[in-house]
Length: 87
Image (cartoon, rainbow, N blue to C red):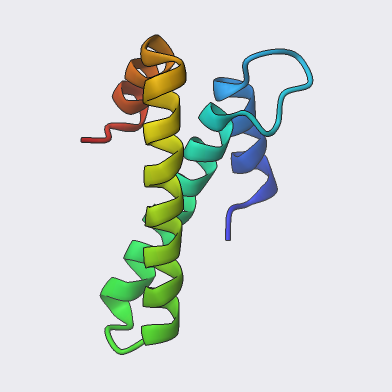
């Protein structure tokens, strides 16, 4: 899981306005962090199929959010993908 401090930093970095915690940018950043954590976990525990299924769910959710963001805010999409080194 993501530590509180790291989560707070990600929200601060990607938020759109002062009280923003749930915009697509923030959600994509948080999902990316969880995906990276699970990827490292699965490198150590190759037979953990329950976590693998969870990882695939998170990747699909992030992909849907990215396609939504690309349609609604192409500039924001480019910034997020560049910052998180996606694609």
